Length: 228
Image (cartoon, rainbow, N blue to C red):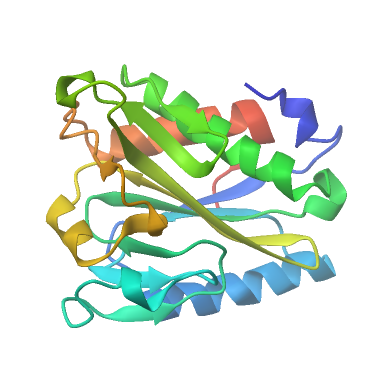
């Protein structure tokens, strides 16, 4: 795991930690995230992690290919400024929108993504799931030996954007979503592997438990948090 000092300079102010219990519309969330990231870059607002769930929808990252949208009429589709390709968001999936000031912390996008991966892996470990990173695929993966040699599924996705070194978008962790919705896309452009969730792996946990684990492990890597 990355040391906290990589992303938590001495004297760093705590990151604001917000949790939305009701579903939040995608366009509403992005508008608020954009405004907050701009304010963070200007130094007029504190950093923020916002945990939420979206209604069922697909988002297309900057590298999305039309052929990977298998069922274009299944769910609403939104263009996104984040990196990556198509992904699904919906109830039972915990989204973490992360708005940090990398110029002050560490202006290194690759290291930042590695930090997000380490955060997700540490969170999964709290529930007895071994998450792994892959050099050729962004996100967090779990091995599925029950499905054959080399089989593995994606359990968490990462898609980020940086604007004046303020970060936008972030991570999504499959807790107990409707995995059939992934049939409408080629998730992140990966055709050779599947998608799973904590529930499918036999870890039935509440979203509140996931939120607590995410907050504790975030602090291990990125520093202290505070309530709004």
